[in-house]
Structures are given as C-alpha cells and as structure tokens.
Amino acid sequence: MLTNQMVQILVFVILTIMTLGGGLGVVSSRNLFHSALFLVLSLVGVVGYYALLDAGFLAVVQLLIYVGAIAVLILFAIMLSRGLMARRQHQRNEQWWIAALVVLLVFVVLLVVLGQVDWPVADEQALLSPNVSVGQLGQVLLGPYMIPFEVISVLLLAALVGAIILARET
Image 1 (cartoon, rainbow, N blue to C red):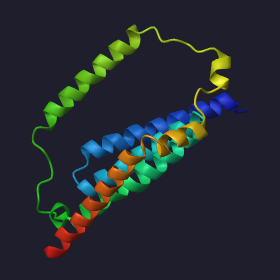
Image 2 (image 1 turned 90 degrees about the vertical axis):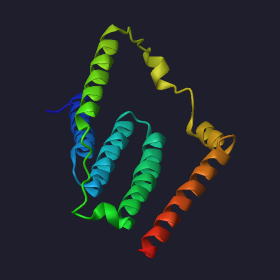
Image 3 (image 1 turned 120 degrees about the vertical axis):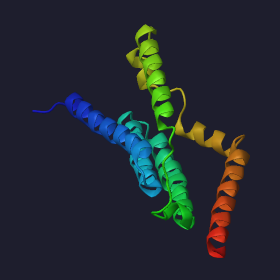
Image 4 (image 1 turned 60 degrees about the vertical axis):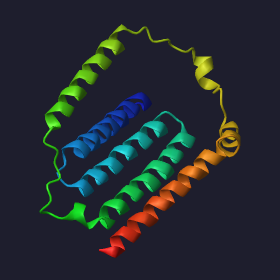
C-alpha cells in the first residue's frame, strides 16, 4: 500500500525526469521549434514542483506567465520567422562542446557546494505558518512592482507585433 510520502516521492521523481528531460531536449534538439516545445515541458515540470511544495500561487504564476505567455511568445516568434523553420538552414552551433564543458564544470561546483554547506533545518512550526500570505504578495505585485510588470508586458507585445510585421513583409 502506498503511503502519502511514497506518493510524493514518486511524483517528485516523475517531475524530475520530466523537467530534466525537457531541459536536455532543449539543448540537444536540432529543430528550434522542438526545442521550444521541450522548454514548455520543462517549465510544466517546475509547475509540478511548486504544486508539490504546496505553493499554489507560485504554481499558477509559473503556469500563466512562463508556460502560458513566454513559451507561447517564443513559439509564435519561431513560427513567424520563416528562415528558422527551413530545413536547409544549419541550426546547430559548432561550439557545443565548450558549452557542455562549462555545464559539466558548473555541475561539479554545485555538487561540491551542496556537499559542504550546512543547510539549516526549519522546525515544524515555522513550516506551518508562512511568513508571506497570498494577499501580501498581491499587494506587492499591484503596488511598487506594477509598473515594471506593465513595461514588460508592453515590451512583449511590441516584440510579437514586430515579429508579425517582419513575417508579413517576406
């Protein structure tokens, strides 16, 4: 019989495979459109992590902003720029081995740091009472950070309109 903790571990393993597999697909796919789809898969895995951590607000924000907006914008930009979708164009960087070496080095450094840091463990009372509520997050997002969010949304809209104009001219 599966306990609650075993189910959480199983879901965590599935999300990890999905997130890392999507990330691996992003960097190893030869087709830019397929790479964007793998990015969506990886971002959905991160949504699952937030849901598993019982951070519903962050899961919804991740789903709406990254998966729903940014990834769709990337997909539209790729589809509207016809040159990237052509089969004859070489879409692979010949210096991939340098990137792989840097990634391996960063991974080793992170493993060393992970092993050497004495991570603090919170008591159960601190875990039950969060410091920030969803209402406070909403007030902050609609207060001092409202203008940066609006500027970003206008910038993304301008990029999408520019991609459409460029695609229509060809």
